[in-house]
Image 1 (tube, rainbow, N blue to C red):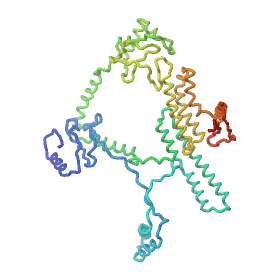
Image 2: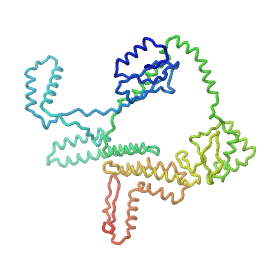
Image 3: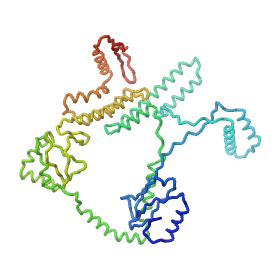
Length: 495
Protein backbone atom coordinates (compact mmCIF):
# COMPACT_ATOMS: atom_id res chain seq x y z
CA UNK A 1 0.00 0.00 0.00
CA UNK A 2 2.75 2.44 0.93
CA UNK A 3 5.00 1.11 -1.86
CA UNK A 4 8.17 1.52 0.17
CA UNK A 5 11.33 -0.45 -0.67
CA UNK A 6 12.37 -0.44 3.00
CA UNK A 7 11.71 -3.50 5.17
CA UNK A 8 8.29 -3.69 6.81
CA UNK A 9 8.24 -2.24 10.33
CA UNK A 10 5.71 -1.53 13.04
CA UNK A 11 5.16 2.08 11.97
CA UNK A 12 4.40 1.13 8.38
CA UNK A 13 1.97 -1.60 9.43
CA UNK A 14 0.24 0.90 11.72
CA UNK A 15 -0.20 3.39 8.85
CA UNK A 16 -1.54 0.66 6.57
CA UNK A 17 -4.10 -0.39 9.17
CA UNK A 18 -5.24 3.21 9.67
CA UNK A 19 -5.72 3.73 5.92
CA UNK A 20 -7.80 0.55 5.72
CA UNK A 21 -9.94 1.43 8.73
CA UNK A 22 -10.60 5.06 7.68
CA UNK A 23 -12.34 4.83 4.30
CA UNK A 24 -12.79 8.60 3.82
CA UNK A 25 -9.01 9.18 3.73
CA UNK A 26 -6.95 8.45 0.62
CA UNK A 27 -3.20 8.20 0.03
CA UNK A 28 -2.05 10.11 -3.07
CA UNK A 29 1.54 8.86 -3.28
CA UNK A 30 2.31 7.04 -6.52
CA UNK A 31 5.31 5.12 -5.24
CA UNK A 32 7.85 7.66 -6.43
CA UNK A 33 10.71 8.29 -4.02
CA UNK A 34 10.45 11.41 -1.84
CA UNK A 35 13.94 11.13 -0.32
CA UNK A 36 17.33 11.27 -1.97
CA UNK A 37 18.07 7.75 -0.75
CA UNK A 38 14.95 6.34 -2.41
CA UNK A 39 12.63 6.28 0.61
CA UNK A 40 8.91 7.17 0.72
CA UNK A 41 9.02 9.17 3.94
CA UNK A 42 6.58 11.92 2.88
CA UNK A 43 2.95 10.85 2.59
CA UNK A 44 0.09 13.00 1.27
CA UNK A 45 -3.35 12.20 2.67
CA UNK A 46 -6.59 13.81 1.47
CA UNK A 47 -10.27 13.17 1.97
CA UNK A 48 -12.01 10.85 -0.46
CA UNK A 49 -14.09 13.73 -1.87
CA UNK A 50 -10.94 15.49 -3.12
CA UNK A 51 -8.96 12.40 -4.13
CA UNK A 52 -10.96 11.68 -7.31
CA UNK A 53 -9.24 14.23 -9.58
CA UNK A 54 -6.25 15.07 -7.38
CA UNK A 55 -2.80 15.13 -8.98
CA UNK A 56 0.31 14.30 -6.97
CA UNK A 57 3.87 14.65 -8.23
CA UNK A 58 7.41 15.23 -7.00
CA UNK A 59 8.94 18.63 -7.76
CA UNK A 60 11.82 18.18 -10.22
CA UNK A 61 14.18 20.83 -8.77
CA UNK A 62 12.99 21.98 -5.32
CA UNK A 63 14.76 19.64 -2.93
CA UNK A 64 17.06 19.26 0.06
CA UNK A 65 17.44 15.72 1.41
CA UNK A 66 13.66 15.44 0.82
CA UNK A 67 11.99 16.19 -2.48
CA UNK A 68 9.19 18.75 -2.42
CA UNK A 69 5.83 17.38 -3.54
CA UNK A 70 3.10 19.16 -5.49
CA UNK A 71 -0.56 18.34 -4.90
CA UNK A 72 -3.22 19.81 -7.19
CA UNK A 73 -6.79 19.61 -5.92
CA UNK A 74 -9.80 20.37 -8.16
CA UNK A 75 -11.34 22.90 -5.81
CA UNK A 76 -13.80 25.38 -7.27
CA UNK A 77 -13.18 29.06 -6.49
CA UNK A 78 -14.99 30.14 -3.36
CA UNK A 79 -18.36 31.71 -3.89
CA UNK A 80 -18.47 35.16 -2.27
CA UNK A 81 -20.82 35.19 0.71
CA UNK A 82 -24.19 36.72 0.21
CA UNK A 83 -24.89 39.96 2.01
CA UNK A 84 -26.47 39.47 5.44
CA UNK A 85 -30.28 39.18 5.25
CA UNK A 86 -32.34 42.19 6.20
CA UNK A 87 -35.83 42.50 7.59
CA UNK A 88 -38.52 43.87 5.29
CA UNK A 89 -39.75 46.71 7.49
CA UNK A 90 -42.55 47.59 5.06
CA UNK A 91 -44.26 44.26 5.78
CA UNK A 92 -43.70 44.26 9.54
CA UNK A 93 -46.42 43.14 11.95
CA UNK A 94 -45.78 45.73 14.65
CA UNK A 95 -48.51 44.52 16.99
CA UNK A 96 -47.02 41.05 17.05
CA UNK A 97 -43.54 42.52 17.41
CA UNK A 98 -44.57 44.59 20.45
CA UNK A 99 -46.46 41.68 22.01
CA UNK A 100 -43.32 39.51 21.72
CA UNK A 101 -41.22 42.16 23.44
CA UNK A 102 -43.83 42.69 26.17
CA UNK A 103 -43.89 38.97 26.87
CA UNK A 104 -40.11 38.91 27.18
CA UNK A 105 -40.04 41.97 29.40
CA UNK A 106 -42.62 40.55 31.79
CA UNK A 107 -40.36 37.62 32.70
CA UNK A 108 -37.03 39.41 32.38
CA UNK A 109 -34.83 39.79 35.45
CA UNK A 110 -32.58 42.81 35.04
CA UNK A 111 -28.93 42.12 35.87
CA UNK A 112 -26.71 44.70 37.54
CA UNK A 113 -24.34 44.83 34.57
CA UNK A 114 -25.49 47.51 32.11
CA UNK A 115 -23.64 45.90 29.20
CA UNK A 116 -25.40 42.61 29.85
CA UNK A 117 -28.77 44.42 29.79
CA UNK A 118 -27.86 45.90 26.40
CA UNK A 119 -26.95 42.46 25.00
CA UNK A 120 -30.16 40.90 26.35
CA UNK A 121 -32.28 43.65 24.82
CA UNK A 122 -30.55 43.23 21.46
CA UNK A 123 -31.25 39.49 21.44
CA UNK A 124 -34.88 40.08 22.43
CA UNK A 125 -35.40 42.61 19.62
CA UNK A 126 -33.84 40.26 17.07
CA UNK A 127 -36.02 37.37 18.26
CA UNK A 128 -39.17 39.50 18.07
CA UNK A 129 -38.23 40.75 14.61
CA UNK A 130 -37.69 37.20 13.36
CA UNK A 131 -41.20 36.22 14.45
CA UNK A 132 -43.03 39.38 13.31
CA UNK A 133 -41.08 40.74 10.31
CA UNK A 134 -40.36 38.78 7.09
CA UNK A 135 -36.88 38.77 5.61
CA UNK A 136 -35.94 40.42 2.31
CA UNK A 137 -35.00 38.13 -0.55
CA UNK A 138 -31.20 37.78 -0.81
CA UNK A 139 -29.62 39.54 -3.75
CA UNK A 140 -26.22 40.50 -5.14
CA UNK A 141 -27.07 44.00 -6.19
CA UNK A 142 -24.14 46.34 -6.52
CA UNK A 143 -23.73 50.00 -7.23
CA UNK A 144 -22.81 50.77 -10.82
CA UNK A 145 -20.56 53.58 -9.60
CA UNK A 146 -18.57 51.42 -7.20
CA UNK A 147 -15.34 51.91 -9.17
CA UNK A 148 -15.19 55.69 -8.57
CA UNK A 149 -17.47 56.10 -5.54
CA UNK A 150 -15.01 57.78 -3.17
CA UNK A 151 -15.61 59.69 0.06
CA UNK A 152 -16.31 62.99 -1.69
CA UNK A 153 -18.96 61.43 -3.94
CA UNK A 154 -20.63 59.72 -1.00
CA UNK A 155 -20.65 62.96 0.98
CA UNK A 156 -22.38 64.93 -1.80
CA UNK A 157 -24.88 62.13 -2.40
CA UNK A 158 -25.65 62.22 1.31
CA UNK A 159 -26.30 65.96 1.08
CA UNK A 160 -28.69 65.37 -1.80
CA UNK A 161 -30.64 62.84 0.25
CA UNK A 162 -30.85 65.24 3.18
CA UNK A 163 -32.17 68.10 1.04
CA UNK A 164 -34.71 65.81 -0.62
CA UNK A 165 -36.08 64.89 2.80
CA UNK A 166 -36.42 68.59 3.64
CA UNK A 167 -37.88 69.48 0.25
CA UNK A 168 -40.55 72.17 -0.02
CA UNK A 169 -41.41 74.70 -2.75
CA UNK A 170 -39.33 77.36 -1.03
CA UNK A 171 -35.99 75.50 -1.17
CA UNK A 172 -36.40 74.02 -4.66
CA UNK A 173 -33.61 76.21 -5.98
CA UNK A 174 -31.27 75.04 -3.21
CA UNK A 175 -32.06 71.39 -3.98
CA UNK A 176 -31.27 71.93 -7.66
CA UNK A 177 -27.91 73.48 -6.81
CA UNK A 178 -27.04 70.59 -4.47
CA UNK A 179 -27.98 68.01 -7.13
CA UNK A 180 -25.97 69.86 -9.80
CA UNK A 181 -22.97 70.03 -7.49
CA UNK A 182 -23.21 66.31 -6.71
CA UNK A 183 -23.28 65.50 -10.43
CA UNK A 184 -20.21 67.63 -11.05
CA UNK A 185 -18.34 65.85 -8.26
CA UNK A 186 -19.37 62.43 -9.64
CA UNK A 187 -18.29 63.33 -13.18
CA UNK A 188 -14.97 64.65 -11.94
CA UNK A 189 -14.36 61.52 -9.86
CA UNK A 190 -15.25 59.33 -12.85
CA UNK A 191 -12.92 61.30 -15.11
CA UNK A 192 -10.07 61.12 -12.57
CA UNK A 193 -10.48 57.35 -12.34
CA UNK A 194 -10.50 57.06 -16.14
CA UNK A 195 -7.35 59.16 -16.36
CA UNK A 196 -5.71 57.00 -13.70
CA UNK A 197 -6.46 53.87 -15.74
CA UNK A 198 -5.40 55.36 -19.06
CA UNK A 199 -2.09 56.57 -17.60
CA UNK A 200 -1.14 52.93 -16.96
CA UNK A 201 -1.79 51.85 -20.57
CA UNK A 202 1.06 51.41 -23.03
CA UNK A 203 1.87 49.50 -26.20
CA UNK A 204 2.43 46.40 -24.04
CA UNK A 205 -0.96 46.52 -22.27
CA UNK A 206 -3.19 43.60 -23.22
CA UNK A 207 -6.57 44.11 -24.82
CA UNK A 208 -8.14 42.05 -22.06
CA UNK A 209 -7.10 44.56 -19.43
CA UNK A 210 -8.50 47.44 -21.51
CA UNK A 211 -11.82 45.71 -22.07
CA UNK A 212 -12.09 44.91 -18.37
CA UNK A 213 -11.75 48.61 -17.62
CA UNK A 214 -14.49 49.46 -20.11
CA UNK A 215 -16.82 46.81 -18.67
CA UNK A 216 -16.15 48.06 -15.17
CA UNK A 217 -16.98 51.63 -16.17
CA UNK A 218 -20.16 50.36 -17.88
CA UNK A 219 -21.51 49.01 -14.61
CA UNK A 220 -20.13 45.49 -14.43
CA UNK A 221 -20.12 43.79 -11.08
CA UNK A 222 -16.99 44.13 -8.95
CA UNK A 223 -14.53 41.23 -9.14
CA UNK A 224 -14.96 38.32 -6.80
CA UNK A 225 -12.79 38.34 -3.72
CA UNK A 226 -9.61 36.29 -3.70
CA UNK A 227 -9.52 32.80 -2.27
CA UNK A 228 -7.47 34.22 0.60
CA UNK A 229 -7.78 37.77 1.92
CA UNK A 230 -4.00 38.21 1.92
CA UNK A 231 -2.58 35.82 -0.71
CA UNK A 232 0.92 37.35 -0.85
CA UNK A 233 1.41 37.19 2.91
CA UNK A 234 -0.01 33.66 3.06
CA UNK A 235 2.31 32.47 0.29
CA UNK A 236 5.32 33.97 2.05
CA UNK A 237 4.26 32.38 5.33
CA UNK A 238 3.94 28.94 3.73
CA UNK A 239 7.29 29.37 1.99
CA UNK A 240 8.90 30.29 5.30
CA UNK A 241 7.41 27.21 6.97
CA UNK A 242 8.63 24.96 4.15
CA UNK A 243 12.10 26.52 4.33
CA UNK A 244 12.32 26.01 8.08
CA UNK A 245 11.06 22.42 7.87
CA UNK A 246 13.39 21.59 4.97
CA UNK A 247 16.41 23.25 6.56
CA UNK A 248 19.44 21.15 7.41
CA UNK A 249 19.20 22.47 10.96
CA UNK A 250 16.30 20.06 11.49
CA UNK A 251 18.57 17.06 10.90
CA UNK A 252 20.28 15.19 13.73
CA UNK A 253 23.70 16.41 14.83
CA UNK A 254 25.64 13.47 13.39
CA UNK A 255 23.87 13.94 10.02
CA UNK A 256 24.85 17.62 9.90
CA UNK A 257 28.44 16.75 10.70
CA UNK A 258 28.44 14.20 7.91
CA UNK A 259 27.07 16.87 5.52
CA UNK A 260 29.85 19.27 6.50
CA UNK A 261 32.45 16.60 5.82
CA UNK A 262 30.92 15.77 2.42
CA UNK A 263 30.41 19.40 1.36
CA UNK A 264 33.91 19.91 -0.19
CA UNK A 265 33.56 16.71 -2.22
CA UNK A 266 30.09 17.77 -3.43
CA UNK A 267 31.35 21.23 -4.45
CA UNK A 268 34.17 19.61 -6.40
CA UNK A 269 31.69 17.29 -8.15
CA UNK A 270 29.55 20.28 -9.13
CA UNK A 271 32.56 22.15 -10.54
CA UNK A 272 33.61 19.13 -12.56
CA UNK A 273 30.09 18.76 -13.95
CA UNK A 274 30.05 22.44 -14.95
CA UNK A 275 33.27 22.02 -16.91
CA UNK A 276 31.92 19.07 -18.92
CA UNK A 277 30.90 20.37 -22.36
CA UNK A 278 27.37 19.65 -23.52
CA UNK A 279 26.65 18.38 -27.03
CA UNK A 280 24.78 21.57 -27.95
CA UNK A 281 27.20 23.89 -26.15
CA UNK A 282 29.58 24.30 -29.05
CA UNK A 283 30.96 27.45 -30.68
CA UNK A 284 30.58 28.24 -34.36
CA UNK A 285 32.73 26.18 -36.61
CA UNK A 286 34.73 27.97 -39.27
CA UNK A 287 32.70 26.22 -41.96
CA UNK A 288 29.43 27.47 -40.49
CA UNK A 289 30.76 31.00 -40.32
CA UNK A 290 31.91 30.79 -43.91
CA UNK A 291 28.46 29.60 -45.00
CA UNK A 292 26.86 32.54 -43.19
CA UNK A 293 28.66 35.01 -45.43
CA UNK A 294 26.40 37.16 -47.54
CA UNK A 295 25.96 35.90 -51.14
CA UNK A 296 23.20 38.29 -52.26
CA UNK A 297 22.92 42.01 -52.75
CA UNK A 298 24.21 44.35 -50.09
CA UNK A 299 21.70 45.97 -47.77
CA UNK A 300 21.98 49.27 -45.97
CA UNK A 301 25.20 49.40 -43.99
CA UNK A 302 25.59 50.29 -40.37
CA UNK A 303 27.50 53.18 -38.88
CA UNK A 304 30.83 51.73 -40.04
CA UNK A 305 29.71 51.60 -43.71
CA UNK A 306 30.96 48.03 -44.21
CA UNK A 307 28.58 45.90 -46.36
CA UNK A 308 28.47 42.12 -46.51
CA UNK A 309 30.34 41.98 -49.81
CA UNK A 310 33.41 43.53 -48.16
CA UNK A 311 33.39 40.82 -45.50
CA UNK A 312 33.00 38.14 -48.15
CA UNK A 313 36.10 39.43 -50.00
CA UNK A 314 38.13 40.41 -46.95
CA UNK A 315 40.57 37.52 -47.38
CA UNK A 316 42.80 36.75 -44.43
CA UNK A 317 41.46 39.68 -42.43
CA UNK A 318 37.89 38.39 -42.83
CA UNK A 319 38.97 34.91 -41.83
CA UNK A 320 40.60 36.34 -38.72
CA UNK A 321 37.33 38.07 -37.82
CA UNK A 322 35.43 34.82 -38.23
CA UNK A 323 37.95 32.98 -36.08
CA UNK A 324 37.49 35.67 -33.40
CA UNK A 325 33.74 34.99 -33.41
CA UNK A 326 34.54 31.32 -33.01
CA UNK A 327 36.87 32.02 -30.08
CA UNK A 328 34.20 34.09 -28.32
CA UNK A 329 31.89 31.08 -28.32
CA UNK A 330 28.87 32.87 -29.80
CA UNK A 331 25.85 30.58 -29.94
CA UNK A 332 22.58 30.58 -31.88
CA UNK A 333 19.20 29.73 -30.32
CA UNK A 334 17.62 27.28 -32.73
CA UNK A 335 14.12 27.92 -31.33
CA UNK A 336 14.29 31.68 -31.91
CA UNK A 337 16.41 31.88 -35.06
CA UNK A 338 15.30 31.82 -38.69
CA UNK A 339 17.21 32.44 -41.89
CA UNK A 340 16.14 35.18 -44.31
CA UNK A 341 17.60 36.12 -47.69
CA UNK A 342 17.06 39.87 -48.11
CA UNK A 343 15.98 41.10 -51.55
CA UNK A 344 16.86 37.81 -53.18
CA UNK A 345 15.37 34.39 -53.74
CA UNK A 346 15.93 31.73 -51.13
CA UNK A 347 19.01 29.66 -52.03
CA UNK A 348 18.84 25.96 -52.66
CA UNK A 349 21.37 25.16 -49.94
CA UNK A 350 20.41 25.01 -46.27
CA UNK A 351 21.94 27.38 -43.75
CA UNK A 352 23.41 25.28 -40.96
CA UNK A 353 24.59 26.76 -37.67
CA UNK A 354 26.05 24.67 -34.84
CA UNK A 355 24.83 21.56 -36.59
CA UNK A 356 21.24 22.83 -36.71
CA UNK A 357 19.39 23.53 -39.97
CA UNK A 358 17.68 26.94 -39.95
CA UNK A 359 14.46 27.31 -41.89
CA UNK A 360 14.20 30.04 -44.51
CA UNK A 361 11.40 32.51 -43.89
CA UNK A 362 9.90 35.46 -45.72
CA UNK A 363 9.11 37.53 -42.61
CA UNK A 364 10.11 37.40 -38.97
CA UNK A 365 9.24 39.42 -35.87
CA UNK A 366 12.27 40.88 -34.15
CA UNK A 367 11.90 43.11 -31.07
CA UNK A 368 8.25 43.71 -31.88
CA UNK A 369 8.85 44.66 -35.53
CA UNK A 370 8.01 42.41 -38.48
CA UNK A 371 10.88 42.38 -40.98
CA UNK A 372 10.23 40.95 -44.45
CA UNK A 373 12.79 39.88 -47.02
CA UNK A 374 11.99 42.78 -49.36
CA UNK A 375 12.32 45.32 -46.55
CA UNK A 376 8.97 46.82 -47.55
CA UNK A 377 7.56 46.27 -44.04
CA UNK A 378 4.16 45.41 -45.48
CA UNK A 379 3.70 42.67 -42.91
CA UNK A 380 4.46 45.06 -40.08
CA UNK A 381 2.04 47.65 -41.51
CA UNK A 382 -0.77 45.07 -41.56
CA UNK A 383 0.18 43.92 -38.05
CA UNK A 384 0.22 47.52 -36.79
CA UNK A 385 -3.10 48.31 -38.43
CA UNK A 386 -4.72 45.26 -36.82
CA UNK A 387 -3.45 46.15 -33.34
CA UNK A 388 -4.41 49.79 -33.76
CA UNK A 389 -7.91 48.91 -34.93
CA UNK A 390 -8.42 46.58 -31.96
CA UNK A 391 -7.49 49.36 -29.52
CA UNK A 392 -9.66 51.87 -31.34
CA UNK A 393 -12.57 49.49 -30.81
CA UNK A 394 -11.94 49.80 -27.09
CA UNK A 395 -11.85 53.57 -27.50
CA UNK A 396 -15.17 53.48 -29.34
CA UNK A 397 -16.70 51.49 -26.47
CA UNK A 398 -15.42 54.12 -24.03
CA UNK A 399 -17.67 56.71 -25.70
CA UNK A 400 -20.85 54.85 -24.77
CA UNK A 401 -23.15 56.66 -22.34
CA UNK A 402 -22.68 53.90 -19.78
CA UNK A 403 -18.88 54.29 -19.82
CA UNK A 404 -18.91 58.08 -19.84
CA UNK A 405 -15.33 58.79 -20.94
CA UNK A 406 -14.77 62.51 -21.55
CA UNK A 407 -12.78 64.09 -24.37
CA UNK A 408 -9.75 64.46 -22.07
CA UNK A 409 -9.90 60.76 -21.20
CA UNK A 410 -10.21 59.71 -24.84
CA UNK A 411 -7.24 61.79 -25.87
CA UNK A 412 -5.07 60.42 -23.06
CA UNK A 413 -6.12 56.88 -23.98
CA UNK A 414 -5.17 57.52 -27.59
CA UNK A 415 -1.73 58.84 -26.63
CA UNK A 416 -1.02 56.02 -24.18
CA UNK A 417 -2.56 52.99 -25.90
CA UNK A 418 -2.77 53.81 -29.62
CA UNK A 419 -0.15 56.42 -30.42
CA UNK A 420 2.48 54.47 -28.47
CA UNK A 421 2.19 51.62 -31.00
CA UNK A 422 2.96 54.02 -33.84
CA UNK A 423 5.79 55.76 -31.98
CA UNK A 424 7.48 52.44 -31.28
CA UNK A 425 7.58 51.73 -35.04
CA UNK A 426 8.34 55.32 -36.11
CA UNK A 427 11.61 54.49 -37.88
CA UNK A 428 10.07 51.55 -39.70
CA UNK A 429 7.10 53.61 -40.90
CA UNK A 430 9.45 55.91 -42.79
CA UNK A 431 10.13 53.07 -45.21
CA UNK A 432 6.45 52.52 -46.03
CA UNK A 433 5.05 53.55 -49.37
CA UNK A 434 2.60 56.49 -49.49
CA UNK A 435 -0.29 54.09 -50.10
CA UNK A 436 0.59 52.04 -47.00
CA UNK A 437 0.99 55.17 -44.90
CA UNK A 438 -2.44 56.39 -45.98
CA UNK A 439 -4.08 53.08 -45.08
CA UNK A 440 -2.35 53.08 -41.72
CA UNK A 441 -3.29 56.68 -40.89
CA UNK A 442 -6.97 56.23 -41.73
CA UNK A 443 -8.16 54.49 -38.53
CA UNK A 444 -5.94 56.56 -36.25
CA UNK A 445 -6.83 59.96 -37.71
CA UNK A 446 -10.47 59.68 -36.71
CA UNK A 447 -9.53 59.38 -33.06
CA UNK A 448 -6.73 61.92 -33.16
CA UNK A 449 -8.71 64.85 -34.55
CA UNK A 450 -9.60 67.73 -32.28
CA UNK A 451 -13.03 69.36 -32.42
CA UNK A 452 -12.27 71.73 -35.30
CA UNK A 453 -10.67 68.96 -37.35
CA UNK A 454 -13.68 66.72 -36.80
CA UNK A 455 -15.89 69.59 -37.96
CA UNK A 456 -13.84 69.90 -41.17
CA UNK A 457 -14.16 66.15 -41.75
CA UNK A 458 -17.91 66.39 -41.31
CA UNK A 459 -18.17 69.34 -43.73
CA UNK A 460 -16.09 67.53 -46.34
CA UNK A 461 -18.25 64.41 -45.98
CA UNK A 462 -21.39 66.50 -46.42
CA UNK A 463 -19.95 68.27 -49.48
CA UNK A 464 -19.41 64.89 -51.13
CA UNK A 465 -23.15 64.13 -51.07
CA UNK A 466 -23.92 64.70 -54.76
CA UNK A 467 -26.67 62.18 -55.37
CA UNK A 468 -30.07 63.48 -56.57
CA UNK A 469 -32.83 64.19 -54.06
CA UNK A 470 -30.32 64.58 -51.25
CA UNK A 471 -30.76 67.08 -48.44
CA UNK A 472 -28.15 68.28 -45.96
CA UNK A 473 -29.10 69.29 -42.41
CA UNK A 474 -26.70 71.30 -40.28
CA UNK A 475 -26.71 71.42 -36.51
CA UNK A 476 -26.90 74.63 -34.49
CA UNK A 477 -23.18 74.38 -33.69
CA UNK A 478 -23.64 73.30 -30.08
CA UNK A 479 -20.75 71.43 -28.47
CA UNK A 480 -20.82 68.88 -25.67
CA UNK A 481 -18.62 70.47 -22.94
CA UNK A 482 -17.40 67.08 -21.71
CA UNK A 483 -16.66 65.25 -24.96
CA UNK A 484 -16.15 68.22 -27.30
CA UNK A 485 -18.32 66.62 -30.01
CA UNK A 486 -20.26 68.38 -32.76
CA UNK A 487 -22.87 66.84 -35.01
CA UNK A 488 -23.94 67.03 -38.63
CA UNK A 489 -26.31 64.91 -40.74
CA UNK A 490 -27.09 64.23 -44.39
CA UNK A 491 -30.32 62.75 -45.77
CA UNK A 492 -30.00 60.84 -49.04
CA UNK A 493 -32.94 59.65 -51.14
CA UNK A 494 -35.40 60.25 -48.38
CA UNK A 495 -33.75 57.87 -45.95
